[in-house]
Image (cartoon, rainbow, N blue to C red):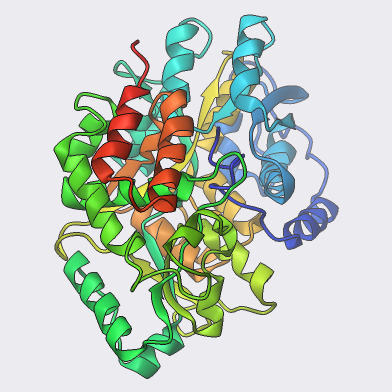
Length: 469
């Protein structure tokens, strides 16, 4: 199940996107003569289309069509389509957008039946790996133009997630940064609290809140998400594995080079439990520890607004949820809510957990390869930022972060594009489906619902569910 389809990605962007897209459509002039050029080598670049010249030069794009298949629906789909409008005007290519909540199952069916789209947005590196291996001749290796853009605008970690057996197939598209802690800047200021820069400082801050504010709790958490209940708890464990065991062990864990219940993972879950299973720490404004499992993930941070909770660990995309709790909530360093980086073991260790989508192509036609190169470029990233509301970021280093609509998105984008932070993709999205979107979710839910369940037992049960091949 994809990040977006289970609410982990760009969850429910604000309705203003649709209005903005309509304004852009009304203001967009018709294609200029020769905008897509003539002949196999592209043609004349129309006035105002200079940014799109590299793509126009890739072939005769005028009056062509490219089909796109994705999981991205709703208001975010409106923003996606709006981000292609200038490209369509300048190249003469019509982008036909199709989104499906059943993408993960249907993309394989479409490939197998010979009806694959021209372009697909793959929501998980694990799914990309499986598709390339199951259908070795279907997904094309990235073109020289796409590879050049990936090398220029993305870190090596992001390139690797789009690579299968040494060959680059997928270029990064959107992204999210999960290693954040939401808080109330005014509450912190009034109490004299500073942002922690290490894990030990985070625990010390939690203890100080317990001692100084006995009518509140340091943390509020919710992991209920319908059939996907438990996924926010998997993010907690993934974040802590990165901080206690390190990125190399994290890689060995999700690839099953070490067992799911390796002692280092048990230690990480116990460390997460120092917060999540601590009745002194949770669940501010919501109940006791067991209430975590029944509190909706998108409402888990709301008690911060009434002062009954101080901190909520969630991704940058959580920002779109605050308006559900209270109209007019301001996200800013001096606003109603903001977020700080979930610290590592030391101030110098900076792992970042996140997710995103990857663009792959199934056709060699010039218009398909040109559009793929556009999506891997800084041109598209900036076009997309201009039509998106809070909750969308990219790891593209060419993105002008000032175009992003929310300060937390700007912070997330800077971190994702920075070599100072060590990025790792969400492990559950990289694991086999029966584990990453199955036993891992349910195991973490049981661990929080039943205090008698030990970390060793829950991880051992998940290990037992790992497919034999």
